[in-house]
Amino acid sequence: MNCSQIPMGIFDHLRQPALVLDCEGRVVIWNESMERYTGIRAEDIVGEGGYAHGEALFGEKFPTLANRILSRGDAGDDTRYRLSAREDGKVIAGTCISPVSGREVASMAAPLYDTAGRQIGAVETIQDTPDARPLRDPPGVPDEQAQILADALSCMIFTLDWDGIYSRFFTTGAAPGSVPEEIVGKTPHALFPAAEADFLVEAARRVIGAGEVVAEMRSFEWRGEQRSFEVTMQPLHDPKGRIVAAAGLSFDVTRDLLRERALQEANQASSLYLDLLGTDIYNTSMVAATVIEMLRERLSGEDAELAQRAKNTVEQGINVIKNVELLNTLNKHRIRLEPVDLDEIIRGQIRRYAGIDIRYEGGSCMVWANPLLEHIVSNLISNSIKFGGMKVRIDISVMETAEVVTLTVADTGIGIPDPLKPNIFDRFNRDARSVSGSRGLGLYIVKTLTNQYGGRVWAADRVPGRPEAGAAIKVILQRC
Image (cartoon, rainbow, N blue to C red; front, side, top):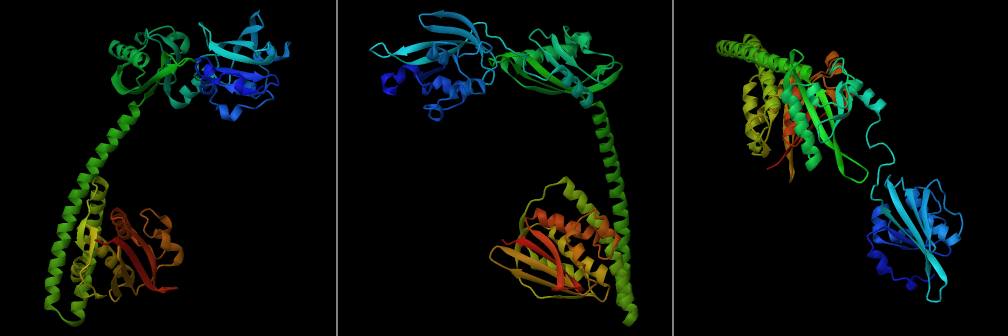
């Protein structure tokens, strides 16, 4: 059949999905409504035979009513079509197009003739019947699966209609003794206090009437104790897309809230104790460091060196307190970046470690950070002393490029074995704590701050390929 013999525009104006087959059973017309109904474009199916149109409708290659017209016989399968009328060559039947819509539709097929009266094909249209009804149960979770979910999740699974009547209800420990048979057909007033039941009924009407999704936390006294539930209700549609009910989930979160409240109280108490302890130890340590410095100035030779070691040890403890306080600050607040003079930070920290062999040549270098940058430099120097001793030599260098600055702090200490290098910045790395080379909390602080500055940090050898010759920690920062 020549497609030009059929005015294509006529079929595109049809609201009903329509197709036309030629006498060989090939698709020659597949209108826009059929495209929307099946999701298959005309260009992908026009010209196809071998019951390709049946596959689009049934999910398998199968003859349709149009094929019955073409064969003038029994091409159609009565298990898919319930014949209701045949007149003037037309065939009208009810059918289930399950892969596409899963609902009852009316199909009509009729022959097409040319001007000489010769049959040139067949047309088929489909339309929802006035009383179209789902051919399967309404979409949703089967009863047995719903009960399994309710038991596993410790929740209530339910469906409410416009009148606030339960059509499905499954529960577990959240409502001891309640079973679907006792609740289905009743309103929430049979289970909950009046105010809570009224909320559920009103929420169901909002869901059904406006397609709204309701999600709220509800707290009320129930069965002799204060309970809290997370309630979510969503629209439930029939096969025609109409909202027919509200499907809901209700989780009992009473214990979770109690645990969260207890945890918050414990955190508040621990923060208070930490603040008090940190302040007392910090103040005591600062007094001790000051007294030792006064003593060191009155001594000379080996005695002065011993006093300096004592002062450095006390300052290590002060650094630990500052790190703990800093961690607490970083966990609570988001830091803001600003231009910071890296050279000034480095020189200020070197002055803190008088008596340590620290070598540095630098110049003005601005990076994106904040005043907490001093903790990066301080912890890198402190770690070098911790694992290299008072006689360690520390080399600090800064290399600038157009966009970044690389800070390197190298020392002549014990170095970092290659297997440990990737993990020394981890706060809870058990392997690192149990073997020589662990760098503790200090490098975790360095990594945390570096990440917040948009940079990165890694461990290397002071002498490439020789871990035993000392460590080098490299930090990349964004240049201003």
